[in-house]
Length: 344
View 1 (spheres, helix red, strand yellow):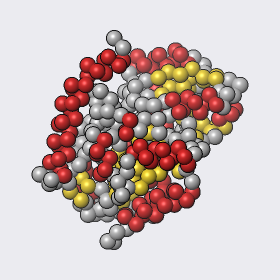
View 2 (view 1 turned 45 degrees about the horizontal axis):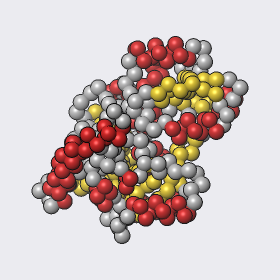
View 3 (view 1 turned 60 degrees about the horizontal axis):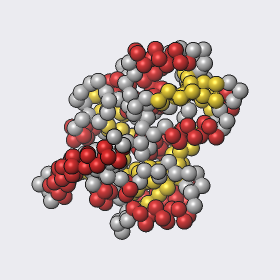
C-alpha cells in the first residue's frame, strides 16, 4: 500500500486527535484550565510538529547568550529518560537519567541548573522555592504544555517542513492544529539555506499568515570547522583523505549529510530514530560497521554513545544557531531581553 493511501486511512484518527486537542486548547483559552505565570522570568521554546525543527539548538543559543548575564536554569520534560518525577542534574546524571537533550545542556553548560520534570508546574515551583532561584528559566518543549505560561514563547518550524504545509498526526506530523501557532510571539524558521533570498523569506511569511503580535526570523545551522570529543579537537578537513562512520539518532539528519557531502568527505551513514536509546545490539552493529575507522555523531547522540567507545574513537560536530543577518539577530535579542527584564 502506498504512503498516500496509508495516510488517507489514518485521516479519521487525525480528525479525532485534532478534535481532542482543539477541545483542550479551548478549555485553556477560556480559562477552564489555568495557565500559570511564574514569578521567575521565563522563555519557552516549542514546536507544533513531532520533531526535527532544531528546537534544542535554539535553547542552546539562549543558554549561551544569557548565562553570562543571569543565573540560568533549563526546565525540560526529559524526553526518553529512564527516570520519572523531578530530577536536578548533577555529576551522577547521564543521558538515561535526564534524557539526551537535557544531558547535553548540562555537560556543555555545567554552570547552569538543568531540571527535568514531566509536570512543568512542579519544576517551576521547585525553582521558585530555591534559596538562590535562577534569574531566567528556559522552558524546553513547552508548546503543548500549557499549564505554565512563559513570558516569551518561541515557536520553531523547519524551512523544509513548515507547519503551514502540514497536518495533524497521524495524517501528518503536527501535535496540534496550525492555529496553535498564534500563541507564539516569536517564530523562528530554522534550518534555512544560509543565503535565503528576501523574496523567499517574503513567500514564507505570507504562507505562515502571522498575527500582528508576531515577529518572524529566519535562521540556519552553522557548522564548526572541527570535530571534537572529550580529549581533543580535530580540523574537519584533515579527514578529507580518509573515511569515517556517521551515526545519527536525530529526526532530520539530511542537512548534516548535505553539509558533509558538500565538503567532499567520505563516510558511511548509520541512521537511527530520533532520541534512540542505543542497545548493546545497536552498539555492536556500530562497532562492526566502523571497524578501525573513527565515528562521527551529533552532539546530542555523543552523550549516549561515549560510554560504549574508546574516547579517542568517537567525535561530534558542534553546531550553533545563526540568524539571516546580524541586524535580525539583534532585533530578536532586544525583544527577548526587554520581555525578560519587564517589571524587574
